[in-house]
Amino acid sequence: MRELEGLHAVVAIRGGKTVLEHYGEGEDSSWARSLGTVRFGPDTLHDLRSVTKSVTALLYGIALGEGLVPAPEQPLMRYFPQYPDLAAEPDRARLSVEHALTMSLGLEWREDIPYDSPANAEIAMELAADRYRYVLERPVVEPPGTRWSYCGGATALLGQLIADGTGQPLERYGRTALFDPLGIESVEWMAGADGVASAASGLRLTPRDLARIGELVLAEGEWDGRRVVPAEWIRTMVQPRLRTDWGAGYGFHWYLETIAGQRMVLAAGNGGQRLAVVPELGLAVAVTAGNYDDPEQWRTPVAALEQVVLA
Image 1 (tube, rainbow, N blue to C red):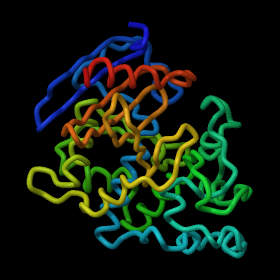
Image 2 (tube, rainbow, N blue to C red; image 1 turned 180 degrees about the horizontal axis):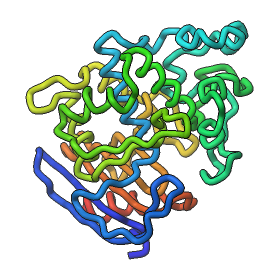
Image 3 (tube, one colour; image 1 turned 90 degrees about the vertical axis):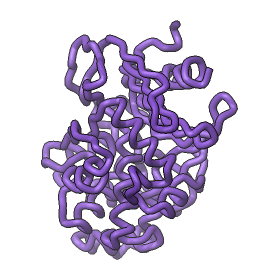
């Protein structure tokens, strides 16, 4: 069906059992690098794009539980002391970690431009000599906390707080704190030209392993009898705090929407990548697709959820 064009894979898990697993074939790319036509299977890694942001939020919660990163209410600029000129500006001094977690920094940031253009703020950040200064010195357009505004730079700041607090590169901490406990062995975390892993869009996982992360959220951070993420963080993370431009709720780097009558906690990425957690059904669904930069890319994962999984 047309609504499922570009679909690469769907994996649905309920009660620890795989209830649906489908793999297709199609054109794919990794960031801007074409992979040609790919026949997808259980072991095929796939770009998660901005689903990475939600995984970064999980890592922040783990590090917070270990006392290694600042609490959400803490002033953000305090943890970037290398920019005293920016911290001296009253508008920027008001920024908190929570403003980064909820993408409400109040700074000018445009990602509605194709990701192959340096005019896109995330691409410009990746090309900047200092990515964190690039983010923090964006013009102030409104008071922080006023409005949700999509911002990969906010996630980059969180990634740096994790790296600074843990003393480990983000990708290494991700492996030891999250992926290894879940038994996820095959992971790629792509980095920019400066070698820093992209907290906003760099992860590549298999759909099966992505669905495992959904199971972890369902279980409020517990896996195989082990506490991986503090339960309080999971509950806090998925509480809606702001509204997106299209009306979804937004927590700490996770979306809250109702699809086909079911309340869902969602992670979303360019091209149609989705991780859907459906608490009332005990269901975790991973969807990967190749509709990158398509204005209607959302149709494929929504159709997969509505017409295939939930049906």
